[in-house]
Length: 242
Image 1: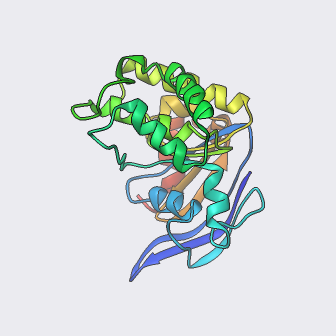
Image 2: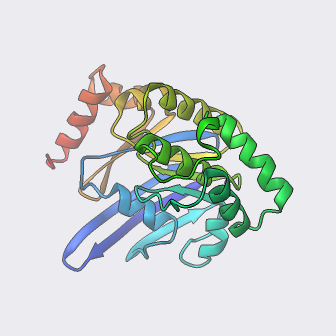
């Protein structure tokens, strides 16, 4: 479980997070919704300990990432917008390398590579070098790296961007299976269809502040609007920040 209370973060005079609070539970997929510039990526980077917060508290299964970042990172998979692929390595070689970095033994790495390859339907690129990969193929490899060490928490920054229909379906199947295994998943996304059909909970932030949290249906009921996208716009507008 991830618990965040009044987290704030500034870069000079720019306040990226002005007071974010929420709880993301195990065995659930939590959507992180917000306009561009709302602070979503800053929040994710703060959760994993890549950025130090200025104020507030973060607890990931009882551990503060600022106090023990290595313990937290060992149990987190983080997919960012920077994939960091090594173009001279094949997908298999790349995943093997990151498995070793995570302290996995060779049999476990080989077994897990087979599992994530099937999960994400990427058999066709497993033994290809990543140079020349499409955006969707690059995202698949980065996501496979994120899942390789079986993290209990997943932080995903727009994981479906650039994916075709079949790859998007594979991603959704993977997330459903991870939820069934008890993972705590936080997914920043702009795709309302994903939120409606996949997510158990939604955190709405704007200009670095938490606007609302609840199941998609609860947010619709709160605003009296049946369509989640329109409800989202209404919630953000309620705070006078659009």
